[in-house]
Amino acid sequence: VVLDGGIAMYRYVDEGNYFEYVGGTNDLAAMTVTAEITKPGQYVLAVDSCAPALSALELSDYRATPTVTAYIDDLSGLDVSKFVFKLDGTVKVDGKNIAQHFNSEAGLFTYTVTTPLAEGQHTMSFTLADTTGNTETYEYTFYVDLTVPVVSDVTVEGCTNEGSVVEIRAQVSDENLSGVYAMLSRKLTDGSW
Image (cartoon, rainbow, N blue to C red; front, side):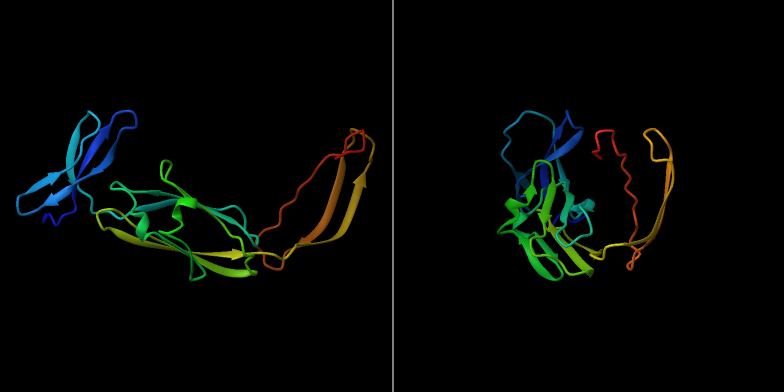
């Protein structure tokens, strides 16, 4: 393995059973790494050759203004100055405004779309870099469905007295075939649902 400056110091954290990035300044000619140690513990020198990982990507819904959430994890720490989140090719979050969207303690990224998206296919991408120079771009496609399902041919059979069984049938179609969900509620004796 050729050490090209990507070597850094890490402290073992017993409570979480993981290594915490400390950093350091490399002098390859002198073969030294200098780092400030502020906490007692076990320290190791290691080379981080893995790019930051993106996981648990979720959209709050597939409507016009969803909220995007994802977890970002990296051994050497995220280089926020190189962070880029794009929506349909347009930069929405970068190193200048990431503080509003990234909780570094939890590793949680959150972005809520403010300009409503049109119905159809959309793309988003994350470009992530860590403090040792490892970089990765993650790209995703999603669909916005604004077409309301059509409900027709509704029939009700059975007794409508309190406590009786009622069967409701309906024809439901969705132009985009993105899913049709039934939501049923029971009418209470006071007339509320």
